Length: 95
Image 1 (cartoon, rainbow, N blue to C red):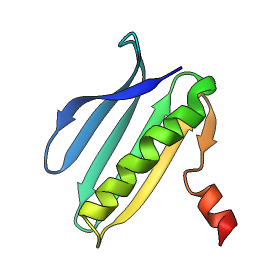
Image 2 (spheres, rainbow, N blue to C red):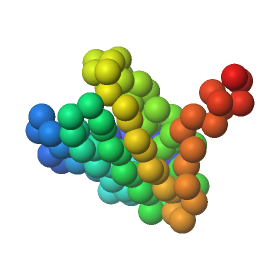
Image 3 (tube, one colour):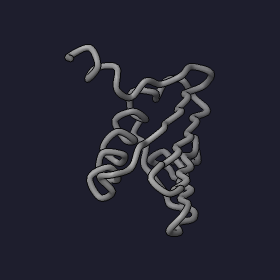
């Protein structure tokens, strides 16, 4: 299943993004909070079957934010169903 971001609220300090499928049905959400030199990210999907798609959607988004704000630390907590998603596990294995 393809999923996409659908912005709900975007401000200088906070972003709320709906995660929708190709029929524009909400299947989850992502919230980002910008505080000083830290970014807190919380995301959850209702269905476990789209965890890899969620990871593929969120990872480049966060990399773009990190590139735009190079001195910030990003703390992410993402879930698909009840399972935690690890964004960086492939990169960590390669080190």
